[in-house]
Image 1 (cartoon, rainbow, N blue to C red):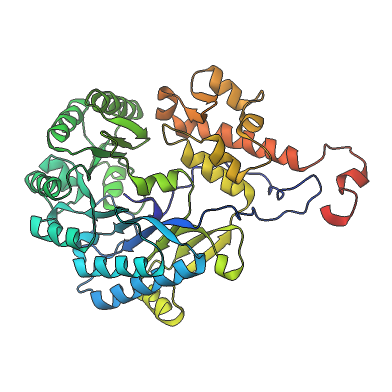
Image 2: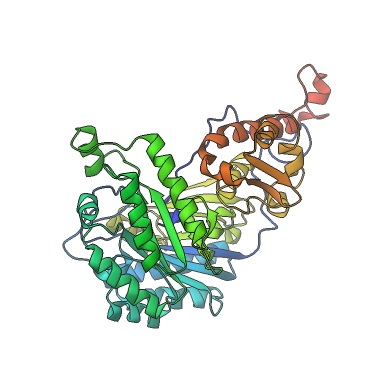
Length: 454
């Protein structure tokens, strides 16, 4: 599952806007990102599926026929346009997500990669990942994608039990999933990832343990585990709401997650991100770009991006979302070179909120260097080292702040969502106090000696 389809923002409600960088009295303004390297990851969204799974609320479409030549031309043009606008000189990784991008032809993947290499440097050996469903991942198809430039595969297995797969509305069987993974491992040894869901309606603790053991017998060196979310508007959520299927209790979900961490850890996997496990150094370079709050460009219907528009004189990072509906997106790309639906300059607070929310998902956490890029005036110690919520979380064993930076402990990583509201509140409070003089200060001091603060 690729992040650039859209991040769920688990941010606490913020009261008021954060003033811009600079001393007290400076007018609010965007956070400059002039020191950002001219590099970015690239996400490419293929929006089509043969059928919609019962739990899916992604931006996907089931249509009678796809004009692949038109879609390919638009993906190529939008990639070229956004790379030009961002003035990115080197693309660190490419991720083809969806939808079901393994339904596209290898020629489409090759065309996009050729366009990227022509508009910016795509280093030899840069990670190029393709999401694939077992139902469209035969050995011959995967070999075609390898020839097109793909060097890493992420397979949406989701379950190795046929009854669970039917409940999820998946096209494939457990046997087909095994066959696809084996074919992928032969073509992409050490670079094949498996997606697995847990917390399914009616799934027991023992059944989950069996799925884990079966996965370990099959998998390569990377596994992504996602707790099933019952999203409003999906068929599965409607079944649970109607009482046709039981909702799993929260304590069982926590136990399943704990079991997975222990089982995978014993098998040599590093739990390097809340939902991701790797051994032998097989971490996902592309997804690390998201979690480290690096620049990324989203191409295709509904894709999200975070980058600076340097070609337009921009110096601050923007949040961008492409038009979600494919036909409308293609019209916009054909007329103006890109199909950006919305764009907004991220404030200093918003950038730090994203860094905090995403960075703490990893076992490495947020390094001092990375924090300093977004907050050169207030370091991690100044924000989270003083008495307050973060200090209390450190004393309780959930959080660590040391020479390596700020990160969750093993226990804290499992309950990150419950820690974030307090940390976000402290971030807002400390940065707000640093930008504004205390109440009761003389009017001249509050205005910073002039009209700049008005």
